[in-house]
Length: 149
Image (tube, rainbow, N blue to C red; front, side, top):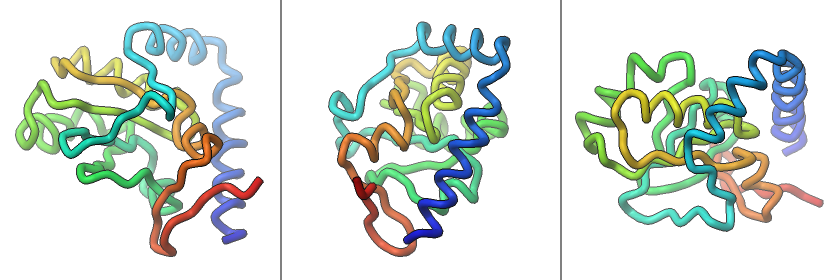
């Protein structure tokens, strides 16, 4: 359990370093304004909801939000995989909620999906960390996990 918390903290540190770039901050801010940002409390996951985790595979392995339709497409491969993994299976109008560790990659992914013609796209504000901080749990190979406060 300690190892998972250590990994999540390492990802948070990397994220914080990356957001030092003002250009990235400007882009992320624009993405947040162009797409709906849902808080964990506003997020309703039903059988038609696609939760799209845009983190890297090793991040996904640390834990994910469970849903009937959970997909993982790393942000860097989104444009190349979205048509085959989402549009051809669920359609361009499917309800898609993107998320990453803390929100920015999810916001960028949501904005890009909208530009690609997907019509019902939102981002989980605060990402996986916001989800955990709201008292909700994630799943991984160990089972169900929650943040200990």
